[in-house]
Structure formats: structure tokens, C-alpha cells
Image (cartoon, rainbow, N blue to C red):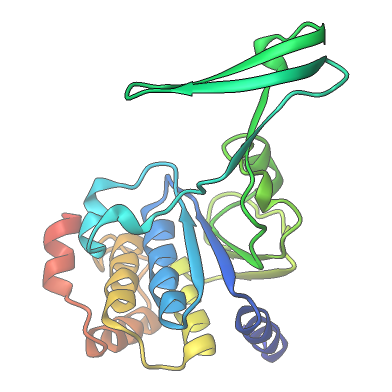
Length: 246
């Protein structure tokens, strides 16, 4: 990470109150790194939302509960006026369901004409982890998350990943090390070397996932030094090993 990147990242995170984390949900290292950032940013009194389609069961031990993964609560149902004029709307609600009734004055409404999207306030910052093509993600998995459009993006990825990153962020933090090492350096930039236990557990889990439990050709001296730092910060390697079962 360059000095300019450190300064720019420090400023953008310091000025952001509402931050959204988007991890590649098919990648365990991406999720564990996102959780480490979640705990760190929460400690800095940020309002953080972690968007993951399906939380992996074997990482549940890293959080007191999965309730911290909060989805938006406000949404909009939209019908273009060129399709139909709606002149009356009412709803009925009971213990089983909510039904919204529309009366059309002109035109015909089909199922495909109705749009559904979340309408939360735009986050001050979006941090993506191992996302290769953010625009493609918005058009597919996150197409109902309209509030994510036009927010500044900190794009974090590892050049060791198999696919090329599209460099879509305002800041693109992409290095030739593991994603976990990049996030660890980022945390020390925004918070210093005092890492809370929850973040340390997540980061050590990320290193263990990346190296296949410290086996194979991905191991470096820097990884061992990072693991030692995390254990000194309270990371419980025995607990992590028992739960990951790598």
C-alpha cells in the first residue's frame, strides 16, 4: 500500500458514517476478511452493513450470532406511468400476509412491468472484497439494491486471484498477497496495530483458509509474522482450527 493510498483511505473512512461491505459470498477468505473489517469499523462507531447472500455455516463461530448481518428495511414498488396510470391504492394486512391492491385507470400492468428495489439512504462508502466486476454484480445479484448506485467504492482484491479485477473503485487496493494480509494492513492504517479479538479471529481464520491451514506453497515468512501478531491480539487458533476443519 503506497503512502498516497494510506492517506486517501484514511480520509475516506474517517469521513464515512454509513459503510456497506460486499464480500464474494462463494469465497470463505473474502467473508472472513469482511467480518474483520465489520468488527473494526463498528469499534470506530461506524454504521456498517454487511451484504452476503448466504452466510456459510462453518464461519458462524466467528460471530456471536448472524443477526449482525442486516438487510435494508425500506423498499419501493414501482410501475412506470407510461405503462399504466394508477389512481387508487389500498392494502389489507392479516396474520398471514400483506396484499397491496392497485386500481388502473389507463393501460395494462403485467408482472414484468413491476419493479421492486430497496430504497435505503446511499452509503457514504462501499468496500468490496474479491469482487471482480462490480457493475455486473449490481445488474445480477444486487439488482434490487438501488441505493448502492453512485456511492464511492474501495475495491480490495488480491492479484493471486484467478480472474482479473476490473479496477472499478475510486480506490483500488490490489496487491500480490492474500486478501487477508491486505485487510490486515488496511486495519492497521485506519486503527493502528491494536486489533480487537473478534477481528483477529476473523483474520487468522482468513490466513488459515488461504494457506490450507499453513500447508502448501502459499506460505511466506510474512504470513507467519501476521499470524503471530494476530495470536498476540487474542486470536484463538485452536478454536478456529476446530471449526474450520480444513
